[in-house]
Image (cartoon, one colour):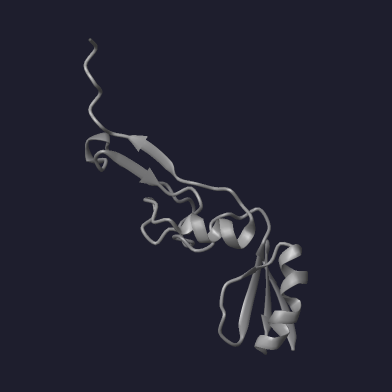
Length: 119
């Protein structure tokens, strides 16, 4: 069975059998759907315009503040793919995301090493 439910700008397709998901994967992924579960029933989510799949979805806006003095040394690596389990810091989740989707996102890297003195 396939059941389509619309909530705001999201569409959820519930697929009852793993075989159905395998046969629909090419069609649904090409239309912008993303698999969020590999267990039965599978859930495919289409959220046009949304890039954040699951980080603090109950917040109206996700904003993180870090004091410059508290940045990790010698570099601070921040997530830009919205899939890191250590968000707002990068945990390398963009590597799997890029492989799965063909995207090319990477982290924001801030060099926090002390500047060298002029000679």
